[in-house]
Image (tube, rainbow, N blue to C red; front, side, top):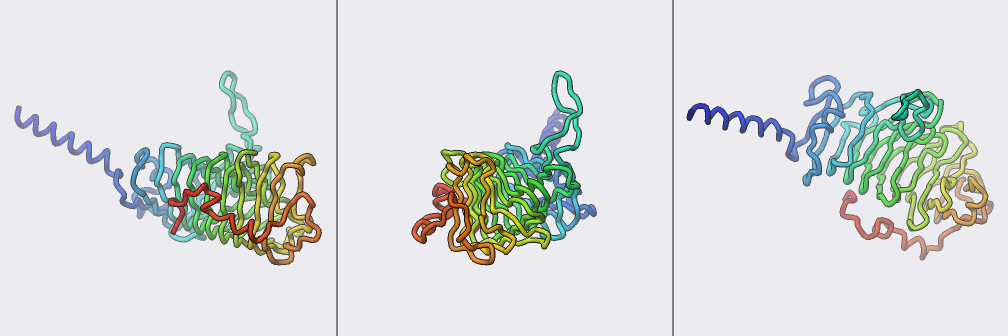
Length: 327
């Protein structure tokens, strides 16, 4: 009997250790070549404990990972860090016109639509991405999202987001995002959505003549997209690009201290629907470059004064909660 109890205790101990193997702040390593603990990023995400109160790093070695990923809302405090931004690539190839089974009572093949096309969807809060490429490499057959965000306090440092139409979808109002030293490219409305997002020192590349942003900022949300010290460039094909158009009536976008290339149209902004000229919040301050000339800007956009611009800081934009920002 005593031996049986010892065996049971030992079994319980081993089971507990197995269940909690990854329930700690140690780094998990992912490698396509099998030299890590997992071969896919999805497997590493799956072993993370719900609502962790410690910082967990998933280190992803160089390689191309064809995965369609979700970081669910019950995960937090996760950092996904690539070995190198140009050689660590998570990619998928869905686009809005891919046919999938949709419906419950009588499912039938229908186009999947924009919001299911993501390569990476982040639902959880306090998630960080560093030194990694998120790509949607579908053919240009419709909207194709690379990054879809719904969580709050999300940080992206030295990342690349590559796509065509609708590359980065900031999909949830009242959520806060911070992009630092990132590269984002696309064709039409390739940064879009209702979130509050600060882009610091980022490079934004237009691939065709179209629109950079399509903010859908809610009326009661004081800030939408703020681009500070960013560089807007063209691949050479794009020569007539708008800074943005409002996806919804009160879209908010500000470019300040940015280098705007000659591909930016003299009028700067488009109304999408004419009545939005009365409500869209489109602002600029202290920009430079060929595309920064203000003499022909649309009259319903506005140039901030030095005093007004000095009041727009990450602390103010993020409602005086900046403890989550990188140091």
